[in-house]
Image 1 (cartoon, rainbow, N blue to C red):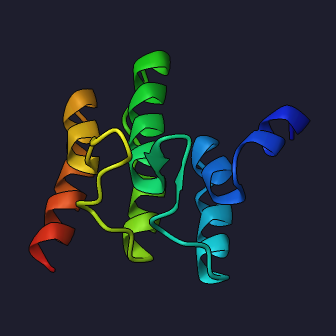
Image 2: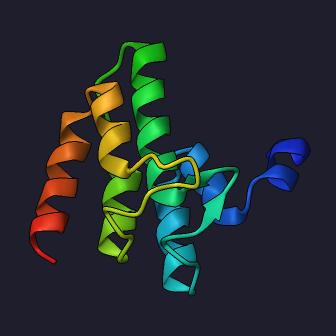
Length: 110
């Protein structure tokens, strides 16, 4: 792991940044806040941003692993980040339909 990256991100945001769903789930199970905010992003807006951006950059299909883990551990699907962007805003920005579908399911189930 790059020392400058690990020193910058919180452990949960680091897991999200590298789409490490297994580590993210472990951190959340150990008590990490699923609604943690760091660097003007909630974990959920960060996850959707990373998933969307990676797909755009690589041309590979959208993933939804970290978004699903966060929602399973109780992340608020409507919590806006400090800049006012909601997870749904981020999903719509990237055309991230799998994340939008998960978000709608969790919003409807509240």
